[in-house]
Length: 131
Image (tube, rainbow, N blue to C red; front, side, top):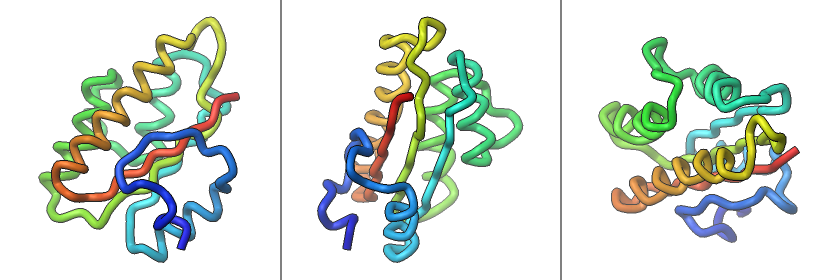
C-alpha cells in the first residue's frame, strides 16, 4: 500500500508519486483526498482562491494564510473525528508574483497543519509540485 511507505504527517515534493495513485491510496485507506491544480494561479490571492474552491472551503473563508490554516485544522477538527488526509498542491506557481518566500509561507501552513494533526494522531500527508 502506497501510504505505508510515506510518513503519516509530512509535507513533501510529489516526485515519483502520481496524483491518481495518491487518490486511490487515500480512497483505499478511507482518508480525505484534497486536490488543487494551481496551474492557472499567478498570485497569492489566486493560489488561495483556487485552494478554497478546490477544497470546498466555506464562503466566509478569509483568503489569507491564517484562514487557510484554520480551515485545514480547527474547522475540520470541530466537524468530528477524521480518518486522515492526502493533500496534493499541483503546479504551485514559480514566478515573480509568487516568489520563493510566498511558496515557503504556503508550504509552512501545510507543515503546521501536519503538526496539528500529528498531535491528534491523524495522518496528514501533503504532496506538492512547482511549475
